[in-house]
Image (tube, rainbow, N blue to C red; front, side, top):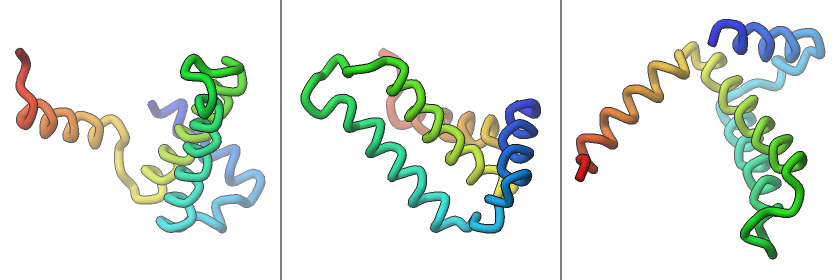
Length: 93
């Protein structure tokens, strides 16, 4: 995860994009990119172009991870915490 963090933060810093980082802007960007991902399934449940789907999924992940880093949160930790909560509410069958 540290390598991914360095790649994303360095890329954004070199372009001075981090000056736009706020919780609101990053949340909006996640939703916008998620909508672009969803467009690929609008008329076809199987998706229409796997490369474009991967590109949009990458955009969602990049913005979500950028938000984690902006908030000084460890994505691995918050995912684990969430899965513990979900497992408590939805036990294995």
